[in-house]
Image 1 (cartoon, rainbow, N blue to C red):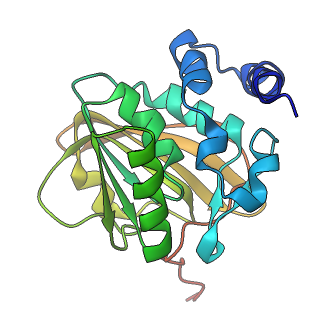
Image 2: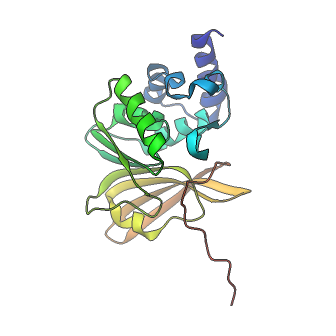
Length: 217
């Protein structure tokens, strides 16, 4: 396989047609080599339009979804980012090139180690990979400029809303099969949040996500 041709085809045939037109994002997808963050057994799928299996039953999002999230996040150089679901570390690597600092939370110890190894091997030093369950928000009093949730949630727990700064954005895939959408929730004032549904998609659920109650009264 001609890797550079496959990367070019991924960007031009999958990602750009999904309205990813920010040249900085497209350049970053060429700079950060996705195949280096894919488990060796699945490296041949690195540029395919599909989710890629990871240890522990988790998955990398499809390339066009990662790219669209990155574009919609519009991370700036001074901003602090929280990611829920480190996976292989690829999304954290992309975010790290645009942010001041990234904290990425991973529930699976094997994946935490994999993400740390991949990020270190890539020379990325402004990412902290921490072990824990961030599906209901992350502990501590720190507020973030951007929160990216790298997996689908049936609904957004309220705890995330208090962790975003005024002017900050939460990017989350919300819903249950067959109806999910990428949503951007912007905190516009102390208790005011603006939600925009960007596009519909299907994605694997985030591990340990809280299921909605099915009781009826």
